[in-house]
Length: 332
Length: 65
Image (cartoon, rainbow over all chains, first blue to last red; front, top):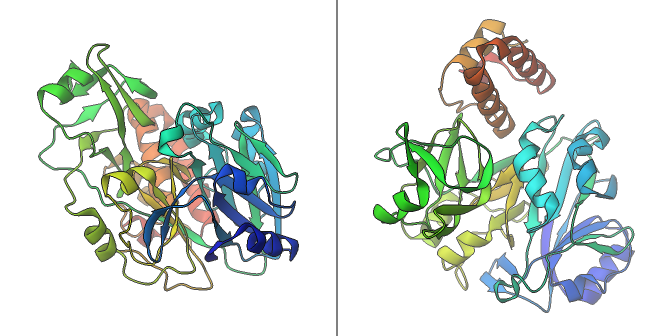
């Protein structure tokens, strides 16, 4: 994997040369690219070597090292079977448009898909400029057809035959606050009204408001040692409901997150080696709440996205792929 | 060497962290633990799924320690 910020002309040249690429950029730039072995998603926020920045003139291009790959667009209805077409040994990269039906489908039902954990699955949810939310739909692009889609998913099946399949991991600055009560939900939803706080049913919006809970900090579940966040999008006290950026999972114990401290500093200190070869995606909420514009976060670079995929949909997390050819890429 | 079924069953019956396991194993175990907690009769299916996963990924008992 190798990352670069490129102009449209440079990116087009690389596509024509047969490179296999994953591209993040403004929609207008992606529409100018020629057909080829690439997938793309809209994003205008990048974490670069020089720091976080908004970028509408150039593209964030990641070269995927593989002899062979297959690019497809899947309709929402076919998403559940995406793993069936994987190479025997390889990596699957999924891009899904933000706020789409496929986004909801993958978030809620993805964890139960057949074959989900059979090989590394990474990806991200495409977005738009924050000022354009509600006016412009996030898109994904199938490079083989040049088509843009605002629903379904584009997938790049990467063949790792003859080489070693890469591994996927996450960097999450948040962990459970041990002083927090446990929070449990009855169903898998993006919007919750009732929550069981230490087994007692309460209205979540009321609970958050009355306890002055900082909603920039996510709810955190412990998945056998992997900390998985669910971030709060909106608290509507009048309606008594709380919207999330990913669904809460029934019967899973969440706790409030402990405050990690100054984000950019903590983030940089958690990165123990250079990540120039790593494919990585960071959450737009980390970008915003961490005020990362102009701040460097080590050398793990990539687009800031509306959700990250490491097998399942994640929030407020950095996902990275450790390239088998460059095993020193490692976050703490 | 395949992971002994007793180790996998112990893994699914506790809440312990799997600090030596890859991310996919942690997520799969978390999913299966919820399934088994909801319905203990699901244990054989969960064990079978975890066993298949650990075998195809070359995991050892140490990954579940």
